[in-house]
Image (cartoon, rainbow, N blue to C red; front, top):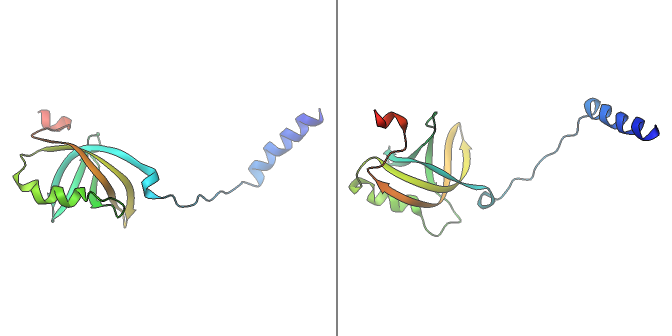
Length: 122
């Protein structure tokens, strides 16, 4: 009975005195993901439009830790590639002033004349 009372009091106190935890900022290299979509150029910036219903857009920037500099490489050859350009971007997400930014480690599976958007089918 005492054990149940103890568990119950801890449970109730968690509502009265909520615990707040603060996560340490993680290293962006540890929180990378794969972002699939089409690449375009707007205002001399590489833009990834995700292959999802919302078609979220991300500004691509070379990651400081990456030796590849994939975004700079893409920008140098983007004008000769046939649109749309499908790619799989390995990057860490960052938000600056309500702008979605991807810190790019690499760009893989770069494919010309391929789209993943449903709107391009019609």
